[in-house]
Amino acid sequence: MTTLILDGKKIASETEAELTKRVNTLVEKNGGIKPILATILVGEDPASETYVKMKGNACRRIGMDSKLIKLSDKTTTEELMAVIQDLNDDGNVHGILLQHPVPSQIDERLCFDAIDLRKDVDGVTCLGFGRMSMSEEAYGSATPQGIMRLLEAFGIELQGKNAVVVGRSPILGKPMSMMLLNKNATVTICHSRTQNLPDIVRQADIIVGAVGVPELIKADWIKDGAVVVDAGYHPGGIGDIELDALNGKASAMTPVPGGVGPMTINTLIYQCVDAAEKHFA
Ligand code: NAP
Image (cartoon, rainbow, N blue to C red):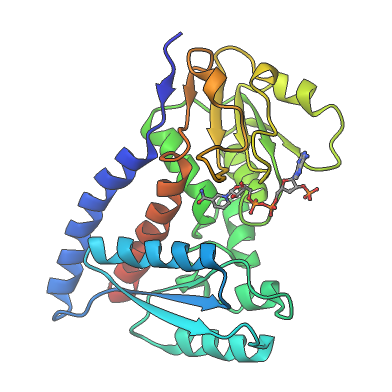
């Protein structure tokens, strides 16, 4: 079987060309004012610093501005809430990203939920999640929304398929499951207390690995012809699924790197352009 490679880098770069045109149009219409994504980084986590830098670079590539707010690792919940409130009130800011994770003294959920729904372009608020789950208008959590855009770009059929999502985090597994359900897949959600994980994975027409454990999901658990989506990324360029042995066995799969990662950042800027268009409309 020839395995279709779900090339996120390619789709992200094609989308950037389209977003650049949309941003140009907005800037022309609004006397040179550029859409702005505000990113908040709390503490010194090197991986988070890299992600925030990549997100800022993506904004610049399409002609948007980004504004980085760097806060110390001693920041309190109240201080972070005040920063978010200022950004909510700032008419020049169209999207807000609070980089996860924040230091443990901060109530991350409270801070996520303080983000104005119209600026929640990373899709992290409870209200946004609830609305998305109910198929109401809202920005989806960037990683699962990016996966849905990738599946759609490659014409992957979801209706009536058995989808197995391994992982139930608020930013990935849970919203992923709701998005697949909304596209009429039959969804099973697995987590660390799930029993007989290999047997459940064997039922999957579509398998999404979102566990954060290198190659936890083994190639021989996955049935021939399945669609394989790996959200994981670990040192050495491996994911949460044993991907190497699936080339030629899966009908389609995301590469690691170059599959889900580029689509996450792309979805963030895609949703920020949408928020800016709504703001200026
Ligand atoms: P997370 O918050 O740590 O959640 C991991 C989930 O996996 C939890 O629901 C956990 O279950 C479950 N799990 C852990 N060990 C398991 C096991 N042995 N069997 C079954 N389930 C298990 O991680 P996350 O933020 O969702 O991220 C998941 C992966 O996606 C990571 O590899 C991360 O690097 C990657 N990621 C990629 C992007 C991107 O842009 N490419 C963005 C975000 C995340 P419990 O709920 O029971 O603890």
